[in-house]
Length: 282
Image 1 (spheres, rainbow, N blue to C red):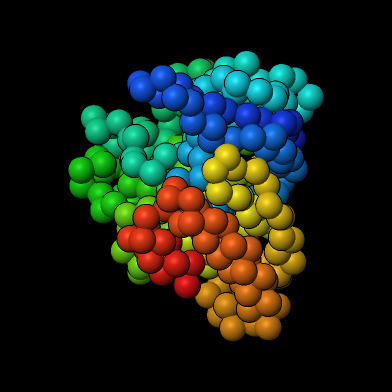
Image 2 (image 1 turned 135 degrees about the vertical axis):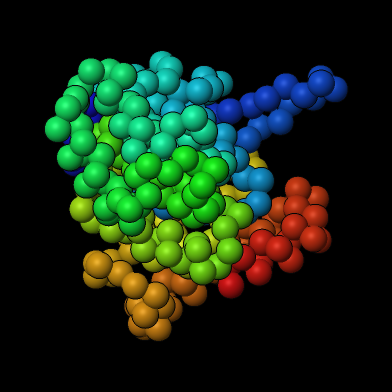
């Protein structure tokens, strides 16, 4: 199958992205953004509202071309989309006419990489890991929002991409479902590894999931600091009471508060945005 259990080394070198608006003005979203995603690691990214997190995902996936800088995967320059990088978006993209089993099986089946009993075993293993083995014959409309997200994760990981890029995949879920999704996702990661890049707007989510937490600045976004999350795995919500966790959260909050205040003062962040962002961080 494509990809590798350990994942690939994805590098962003001096990335810049500037858009020309209809008015003729320009908007610089990223400037000299440098980040390396190491094989087999889970890196989370958090930053002020509207700091270009989704733009970065699109660049790493090859959906957009940067106006400055380059992206490399295992030393090869990224020039467009490819099966070695898969994206899990904020909204589900399951095929409504296929069952959960058929959705997960679609990628390796269409490429002829797996078939018969081997394909069935691979799909059922992932469905079991995300708690959907008993729902294999259900269509997306028959699944809850959380179940659809779990099927989406399984569909991405069965392809063994060198890098999985997740753009706030649990956004819009209620608190309980979101907590369950984190547990399922951690279970998947700890069983399958691979290079994972997880964009989030929730600080606790980033700290609970990641090996490293990247703090981004306000626009134009750069890497402000990378925090190493040296907490034991497997992780559960109980770790949030640990002194090491609280120290990391305090440091991250201070860094994020600095950037949010800059955005607020320059008008990039409205008062309502500021209150909402602060609530999410806490």
